View 1 (cartoon, rainbow, N blue to C red):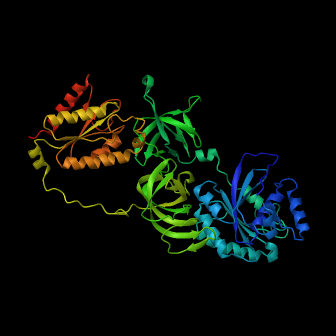
View 2 (view 1 turned 90 degrees about the vertical axis):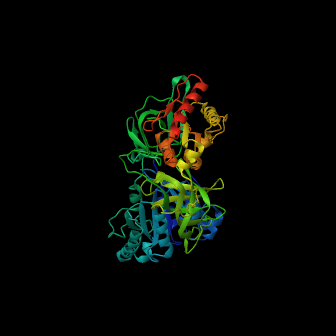
View 3 (view 1 turned 90 degrees about the horizontal axis):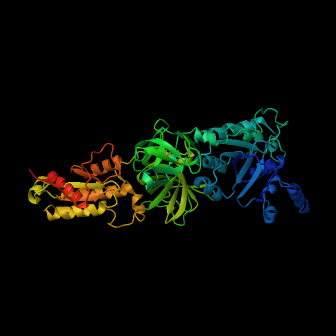
Amino acid sequence: MTSFSVSTTPEERLRLVIVGHVDHGKSTVIGRLLADTGSLPKGKLEQVQHNCERNARPFEYAFLLDALHDEQDQGITIDSARCFFRTARRYYIVIDAPGHIEFLKNMVTGASSAEAALIVIDAKEGIRENTRRHGYLISMLGVRQVVVVVNKMDLADYEQATFERIRQEYGQFLEHLNIHPLSFIPVSARHGENIVEPSTRMSWYDGPTVIGQIDALEKPSADTLATLPFRFPVQDIYKFTEAGDDRRILAGTIETGTVHVGDAVTFLPSGKKARIVSVEQFNTPIRRTAQAGQAVGFTIDPQIYLKPGELTVKPNELPPHVGSRFRANIFWMGHAPLIRHQVYKLKIATKRVGVRLVEVLNVIDASDLETVHNKQQVDRHDVGECVFETIRPFAFDIARDLDQTGRFVLVDQYEIAGGGIILEALPEPAVSSETDTPQWDRSALSPEERAAFFGHRALCVALTGEAPEKRALAAKIENRLLYEGVHAYYLSSVPAGTDRREYRVADDDREDQISTLGETAHTLLSAGHVFITVLDGVDDYDLGQFRRLVDPFSLFVIDTGLLSFQQIPTDLRLEATTEDEAVSQACRLIRDRVKVG
């Protein structure tokens, strides 16, 4: 499709998708909109009319959409197209995708989301199966502003009864899909009736024209997004250490809502809470507020540990859902089909989490909109209504509530293979959908019997804080305890001497680190050992999770400095002047804690 520019440049743009059954006049409606709003490039209309005269064919406004000469020769539109027209109010980007596939791909992935839809119906031919499929498609994609254009009223002698019959029948159908059209408009696109000016041949109709109605469509503005519930996906955390600067800045882009210094915020799915201390931006005056669309940083109090992917919200606003199971519509683009049991990567805002397909509820072939029943997988270019389950809970919104945090993509083998829209949060399964937890045949020896044999009780020792030498310190504590006859074992997620820059990858997956260490610790504690580990950058929430994993065994916390806890008591805060003194102090307290009797 040939693109063009116009002399004025209104800033506001609205994306409009127009769908309709073949030969119902969709392309003619678009052609009329281009011609009657004066949006065609100079000489385009005359060029098409001349081509029609030269080939002894009647002129059709639909030909204005055709970008290739062979398309005009065939008299049909065979490729996806995008064109533009403008009114005094704004620009319109018209998405015309007869092949369906590109339209679905762009819509579902959010690459080119339509903000409104026109559904075109032939007045004489009436509602066809594809008309219903397009209604389902619009509903599935979450388009809220819908206008139904009843075209070719000239072939129905402009009769009101014909129009009312279609409006009642199709209106009832859309009602079942939870679509509430803004209006039904009777038109004759070929003759320009009710396109721009009210029709004198349908005086019984007193509603808006097509242009009048689309000019009345709402365009979400930055100010509108700022009034929605606050959503700030944490993209990264920057830490400063020089010159006594101990700030941690949470960086990202505000998707919706507004936040002020002093506001209480909650981070999901972790559930951690804090308060906004400052709004940070480069080379700008000091700010005390930030809103949707702004890329900013925040400092918070307390300086809890957070990782990228957390969704920041306000506790007094509409909360997102937090869970691992949801129903969604997915457009699949992968070369291999979407199948059950395989783990994919779900990306929503800044969150990354493993996900599995649990159930295929419905599948539509995007090339012809045919419904395929009883499919157990989603093939390339299929649209599927599916149930998914992530390997751990995450925070999300329903797309109809907040589109920005209700759309996601699926990654298969490092490539984006699908895009989806979340329709519903589902209850968590009582038992994992994949496999049951193994039932182990455990030792019959009690902790007391093991303590009597070893001469000491089991204990979990966790070194926290941000002292760079804490791994070396943990290893020396293990060595000293072993020398003194205590069955101790040290295990850390990062070997001693690893560069902190290399540790970034592990640091981003704190939940896995804590979960793995907790399970390992519980096993060794059950065997009667003193288990020693290092927990990097943890806060009250993380340490609480770790403590629950090692329960019923005791947790002994050694704080190496630079990070304090608000709720979890610290058993030892190292303030010794030398490493040997620190090791001696720690071992003395550990021996006192594990002694028998």
